[in-house]
Every structure is written in structure tokens, then in C-alpha cells.
Length: 181
Image (cartoon, rainbow, N blue to C red):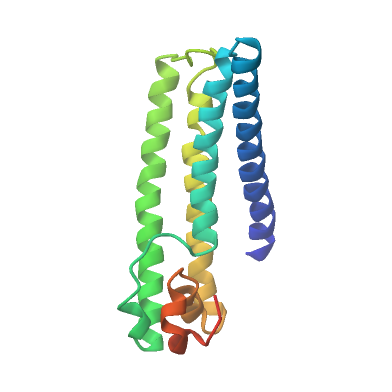
């Protein structure tokens, strides 16, 4: 499974960096153009918005991969190992189901957009193209949720590591082994 995850990790990181770098350059160029030359390219704001959407959905997948998605783990931290393991598996399975429902709905949304031939206002591209970010990012999230489940059964103490990876791990250093994050 690691042979699949490593290239995905590189692709996700590359998309996130490229999209946010491009957004920064577009916004900076837009400000210079507006105040320096009195001209604003119509398409730059729209492209920036589409790239931010892509970075959000790819960012969701990166968050799942790093096990930094939102969760309440205050109670789970004090459970014995087997219950921690069971709760982490259950949470990841719930993530797979919820994200799976969102993937199915996003395909339906894209299908409707394709059928109505909706175009973006400024760039005049079909709107289903930017909307592809939804199923792509969400599908990557499902892959990472499944990988998290596999790691829970193959990596020793993965349940404790997953819980200690949260941003509040420093509050319970006794349970997380000191500075481990």
C-alpha cells in the first residue's frame, strides 16, 4: 500500500503547492495591474477561486493522510489500547462512509452541471472542470482513510500515535510519551 501512497503524497503536495503559489501570484499580479495600470484581468479572480477550491479538497486529503482531521479525542486518550484501536478503526470507517456519500453526490452534481452545459462567467470553461476537484480530493481522502485502517493493524501502537498526532497532544504528555507529535 505504501507504493500507492508515496506517489499520491507527492502529487497531493505538488497540487497544493502549485495551486496556492499560482493563487498568490495571480492575486499579487492583479493588485499590481489594478493599481499600477488601472486594468484588472477578468479571468484572474475566477481562476484564483477555482485553484483555492482545488487546494481545499486536496488539503482535506492531506489532512486525512496526516491524521489531522477534526476529531474529539479527549475521551479516547484514556481508553485502553484495544478500545483506542477499535475507536480509531470505527472513526476511519465512518470517514470512508461519509466521504463515499459525498463522492457519489459530487459525481451527480458534476453530471447535472455537464448536462446543463454551464460555463464559468469569465473564463467560459465548462463548470464541471473545476468541480472535478470534489470527487478527486474526496476519493484521495477515502484512500487515506483505508490506509489509516491498514496501518492501525500493521504498525505497532498506531492508535496511540494517531491520537498523539493531534494538536492538543502536549496537554497530555504523560499519555503521549513526552514531545512526540
